[in-house]
Length: 418
Ligand SMILES: *Cc1c(COP(=O)(O)O)cnc(C)c1O
Image 1 (spheres, protein in one colour):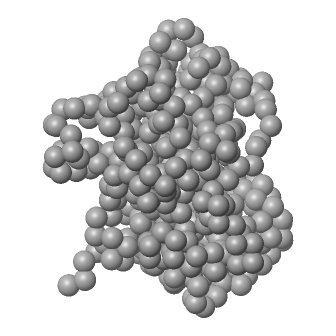
Image 2 (cartoon, rainbow, N blue to C red):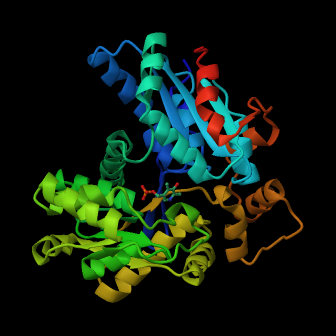
């Protein structure tokens, strides 16, 4: 029998731990899109269809997603050929990288639909939100046996699997004799993962501090330091684009905890964020943030972390993982705390090849993205991941392009609703 993991991951270990430069890197990038969202999005469809069954939902679930490049592909890979579901992804035709577009338009699965739009990501996102709130459309769908759902990051089904891999990482370290059972560790990573680690700590996992890493978009670092969340600042484009945020939707979950699970108080703070661009938590709430340590890496520090870890340990990490590795270094030098860390390795270096190669001093301006992938493989000795190899030669299966205003018509056409 073919083992189940082969369908989704390129290693039987699924989330291997790699020790390098005094840290444990939890590699969460062995799935279909070589980034950590695959971990949750390969489970979410099954959680969703099970929940639908339990709630006697008879309709087929249609996932609608607007994507700036990454989430859409990860969601499609997760929902492809899952019975009782269809997934329709809209992306800005001229707003994603060549490799991202190739990843999407080669997506297999009889229930997957990819539509390019002649507009930007905001146009796609706005039109999708409008469709979610269109009662007439919902009624038409219902009559045809369909209903909409979403796969974006506010879905708790995205967060729950992330708790699981922290427990797995800890148990693996104990099993391999790298830590003693009961010894505390300090997870380091992007906020979404750190929030999952916080839940794991509350469930009893031996965790000391939670180290939250930001890039130059340091809104969370400032929040942990001052207690004020202020999104009124410039949006900086960095080499770790998936961490370029001014509004963290998961932070609301932590704020809810800090208010003593007071939904009204939490809603008040969120309202002041959406209306005035900022909020400040009380001293009492701030006192509960002692378990969190926030810091950030500049662009230079991020590149330096990639280069240092390669020089010291012959291990190549991606830019997002490097932000975490750099912040862990700052934590150690500021606190002199040498507890072992588990760093969330959120993307494969093959996903951000150009920035990684530049950090290693290998520019190769003459090479295209796939050529650069081969150069990285030659340098690192790590084989090119299956996910990249596959799209290199895969046939294009989706070529639909519409104007943003015609998105509802495209949905109806795909679902064969008149
Ligand atoms: C999506 C993504 C992030 C951000 O995740 P959050 O859960 O919003 O913190 C960080 N890094 C990578 C590589 C991502 O794909």
